[in-house]
Length: 399
Image (cartoon, rainbow, N blue to C red; front, top):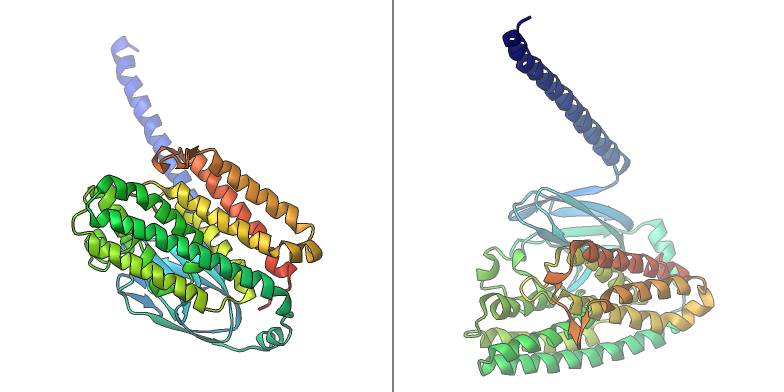
């Protein structure tokens, strides 16, 4: 064969090999797709007790549910084009929630439900609410009869109420100072005062997030409004944050700042007025920490304009410390082996946060690398898991 023929044959062989390789890759990809689909179907079959709720742009499907009392799993599928949240509400109180469900994806909410009628939110805050009816069962009736004595919880619950009162007053004071800086048009001072005001709120956040309507006025992000930052209903901390740190303008903010001051004043009043059952004392902190682990720590979207996320995480951790300290005497008697695990998880999260201290506050979260954000998320999840063992240890898990 001549050199010319060799030079022509080489590209041809290369082309055949490339085509063969493409076929192999396509076959492998098809196999992987089949395997993934098969595993997903198997998982759905395994979790056949999940109740599927589809969130559309302006509604839920179904929007009326009936389930028996006890533990229930809801798979929330986001069929809209923006991140959404789904909540179970008992009057003004949040029973369970899942936030930041990405478009096209789903998340599972596991809830331990008592008999009664609840409302469910469906994505955007402007969307109509659905209903959830929970019917009694023999097990729920037996659990109600087997409640542990509430006498032992009177002290911790009373002390936590004092903590809410003190932190509520600190929040009102911080927001008042922020309000005054905005009123006189001092942008730099308002930016500085936003940070302690926000941290003060985050110390109350685990309890405040039970109050659905009021917490939405104070803390809702722009994502949950139809017109996002331009929506007239977008108020509260994040509306101020957007103006102060993104737009860097302070004009026309006075009414929003005054509304926030009114809302945090009402928050303190409602936190002290609403009863807090002992079985929710730990669960509100667990839910808050799971939000840090699953959404806020990795994405940094909670404080997307000011990047002050670490201040908030530290405030959340402070409340977790408070709850553990209030329950420590009871845990020392009934769950002494659990306490070292909880204390270690608290110390681990503290260590992650302390590494980013800067003066009286923390560095900008925009400077925290993805790997270290994940470490914060992992420590928050570990703490939530450790705290989740408290209720069973104190005889509260069946309530």
